[in-house]
Amino acid sequence: MSKLAHDISHLGAVLRTRAVSEIREHSTQFANMPEFYREQLRHVLIQEWDPEEAMNTAKELFGKTKLRYAAIDGTERTDPTFDLMIFYGGAYAALGTIDLEIYEPIQSVTIDSQLTTGGVGVAACIPVYISEIPEIELARLKFSHEGEDGETRSVNDIFDETVIDNSQIANDIMLFAEIRLGETLAKTKKYDLIILDRYLAGTHANLLAKTVSFNSYEQESSLIGFDTEFGEVTKADLWFNRYRPFSKKIGIPPPRGEYLSHRIFFELEQREELSLGQLMEEFGLANSPRVVTRVRKAVELLEKNEVVTVIGEGKETGIILSEQYKHSLDRIQAVKEAIVARLFDLEDKNTNPLRIEVKGEKRWLTTVDLGLLSLFSFNSLVHEAQARPFLLIGITKDTYSRDFRNQFLNFLNAFPDSLVKIDMKTKMALPQTDRGLLQAVSHVVLDELHPPWATQEYDTAFRTMGPKKEELWPTMSGSHQNIILSERLFVKSFIQLREGRTNPELRSTVLMTDRVVLEEDIKHAIELPSLIHHYRGIREHVHPLVMPANAKDNPIQNLIMRILGLLDAPSIPEAMGHNKPLFVADKVCKWFGEVFGGIVSSTKQWMETHREIRSYAFHLSSFRERRTDFEQTRKG
Image (cartoon, rainbow, N blue to C red; front, side, top):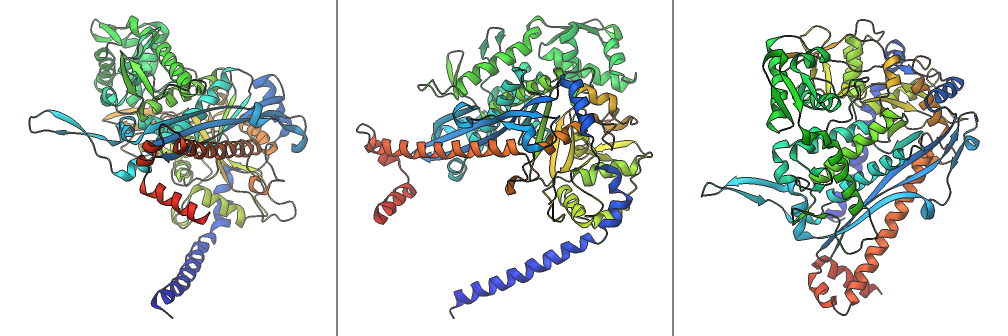
């Protein structure tokens, strides 16, 4: 036997031995699970659901029990063709109705026909020369350095692989398409339930992180200076509209930390003028020199960007919204609609939708711009859900989150009124991810935990906070750079919808769901003490939501579990315990993606045979492309 053959054989034996060892070691984590479930975890899991109460909740929210739904999924592709990168991103929706008065899923749920010919969707197809990609990816790839003459120069530090393998642009377009489609459907006011195949809170946090560089907007955004009927878009417009939506009844955004100046701006939009004393009183802020200083700094940021005018001193200082910024939201909506019209208008064949004209200058929209536009559209979608209201739900199939296990359970363990008191040594021996933990528990206690079940809903802000070490309850700290994300925006839970009829060991995957907080939730949330957060030397208060761990006291979760149970598809093995409309939307997306791939291939062949450009196209093709063509020709 040759050395190579021996090595391959030996690698197989090593792999089998090590894989079995890992699985056996992992299985030892199951030993303490029954006790952990009975003594702690069962207090946060809900198994009993009331279909009659679900109908009553639907009548209160929507005035009916026959609901319209839309399930949205997205698709994207990046195809290199000669020296072009072709980016494709789109989103499509499966639409239908669900009748809560019919108990049989097959009869209660309908999906509109003609999905591929008469369905709803948006898509964009954008060819870009490889040499121009750096201008679009400016924020990710650009940095500055000092030249010998002392001037700051811009340099693109890009490896060939970064450009050739680039897929971020297509992914950004797909995300924008999904959110925009949801916003469009929401504004028709025809849908009572919109489901996205993504983690809402995670998407929101990622968009905020991607667009956080306020001081770099002038270099990284092409939207500044864009002319609308309400005036030109400014850097302040982009920055101060990031933390919408605004709701005083729900309490978003909170008047703390980095949200403070945004909250002041939104308050002034309602009344145009406030005094410093009024702000302090309405926000419930402590009357201490440090807090007053922080509020003044927030106002100074607004004043520096000419958003407000400040008159007087002390608590009677008048803060007046500038005339220009009375239409800030209008400008943001206008620029968003203008870009949407370009990006997703497939009728206009002669312009590249990522190239816009600002003050007579052609500019490429950057990935920061796409992030900002997606964020503005997402904020509008959330606002529509809260204002009407309707249910906006995100479903995540595969997740490696740990906030339920590490943050929320730790919070309950420290909460004096909680029934959950965890032996931390026991917890550390359990699976490390939320889905892994809950999936394992469901498998171990088959006779005690039966689908459909769900964890109690809790604020997604918990994923960024936990009890502060060596501090008394209820002092919290941020999990990253001591920052706690905005509370009362989304609540999340983990669910398992289905078990086999004849074999209870056959159970569907544990899914993570999150949804937009509605005003109705504030009435039912558990009354928690104000959590304390020391941020940059100032004591602030955080007010997250934790919903009751029973269906009776959380009617919206009861309604959602009823709906998701009916939208399950047990007859489709790969969709069992998931969501049939999302499954259908995914299939439509895949179909469109395959069709577009065929279009790209045929377009490339057309270019190779076009009398005017075939010679030029041949010299632009890469070595890999030429080799592939020769190999295919040789094979016949």
